[in-house]
Image (cartoon, rainbow, N blue to C red; front, side, top):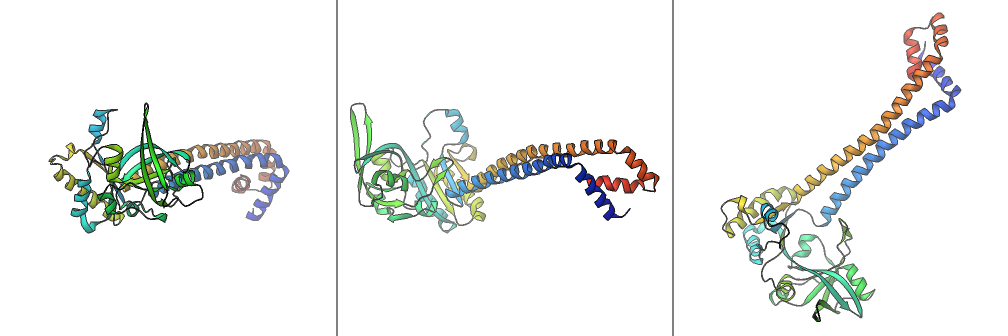
Length: 344
């Protein structure tokens, strides 16, 4: 039996049983579509996570106060305060050309903001002058504050695009004055800041809007807003490239251990997080997620395959006489198997 004749015979059999063939094909089509869709969703989630992490800046090494062991023992207590601006200065001096930029941040919490007759709640963070270089984030209007602003605890602010829109609408926020307010019972604390710049829109990262925030000099946040002088919430370093990050991480640990007079690294009062390690961990999680989704889609495909198997079994049982006649007129076993395989 020629292959052409086998194809023609199989096609004729499918045409005779249109509904059965269509329903069987539908099961496989749904299974294949499910696998493709599930894997696409998993890969999309992985790409979204990677984009969100890199939106914070590339080649970053983050240092936070307290070790994971100490934080676990402390429980819900106040965060450790073991990092200072002096630590950042020392790292900048000793790491030198091995890094591109370094900045420190001091979280000042959420404040009520008043400007132009409008009230708004926003997050206030104290940062140092290299924040734009570390975070790959420049201003769309105005300027960022300089080292001289940090030295004099200047009450100047750079605000996010959303904050600017909420407080000043479509008008120019640069040069305007905004008030930071905190209420303590019957008393209110009001501090004036001059807006010197508006950041470019960045969107959201992990569900948090990065455009709704106010940046002030770190020293101003320490002395004027929080009262926690010199200490910082984190230090962020931008390495020259991803290949340098492991070496820079090791150098950071060495410098800070010496500064804090700690001989055993296990007793470190700080934690160094490498962005490459964070990405690898998140990619491992999303890869498992993608595999799970693919397996779910694969089950649908398996069900469709079993449907074909059942239909072909029924077809063979129904066509026992046809098979006998074919064999009687000289059809070989191979010819009959080929026909049914092509139908499947």
